Image 1 (cartoon, rainbow, N blue to C red):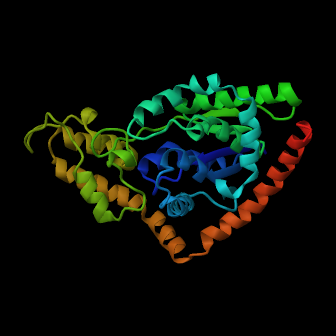
Image 2 (cartoon, rainbow, N blue to C red):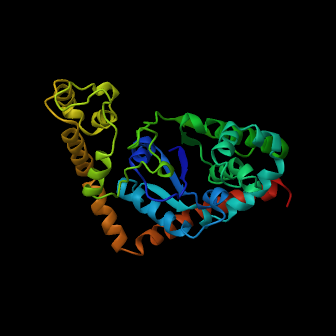
Image 3 (cartoon, rainbow, N blue to C red):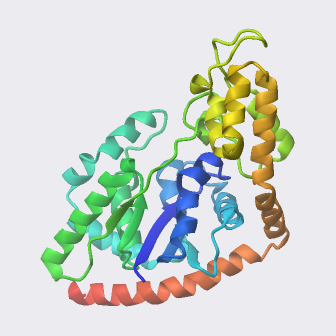
Length: 324
């Protein structure tokens, strides 16, 4: 089986946007490929270096959420980036051959410098973020990397670094391929893309009452002033989520809205129940994992041994190629 690799920045609990945008795809991939998934705690430091107090707990929270959402440790290798210290050594060697101009021209780098203007990100670690990503991928000989369109420049930069390394030292690493997935952009409660930083997210771990309160905050049809006014589902954020969570009854939801047989509050409460019901199994699994304090560390320890066997062999080969 070909090897898939992807990572998750530990920024806290996962929300519906993460699940529909990425996690669902990975669950399907586990039955088709050999899957390596890691929690990128080193990557998180590139922007959160001034305060790492929540890093360890966030890493654990992401692992718990991923497993509760359906990633099976028996079908994939789920590990913590910082447990694989050979990655740092490979990052060093790749950094020696990666031209600064390649990193500076990366569109994602330019965009994030603007978006993170409130933070001091003029650091070597932030600029070299794609080089560390490349090390993560090729140290385990990842062949396929699931990405959205916004991450394609990073992967192409990795491919360029691999070509340069192979040209200088011998044809050793394969160029990883992108597996472009159709990422569903879920709206948050304020209409913008669902994001923790916007404060508009519905988390997978939210209880039913919290979900109901958040859904009730959502903006509905601005043209519907009174309860008796006909609605326009095509411009309603709530209906966008109904298409996912009420798919079997979507025609009825649409008709009831257009015919004013249901009010916006009723429509929101129906959606909230659908979301909460869909997460019942997730909440139970998460509760069980939280109560089993050693479970996540056990998974990390087991995965660490598997990944280190591959990484150590890779680094022995790389040192030999570099005549070290």
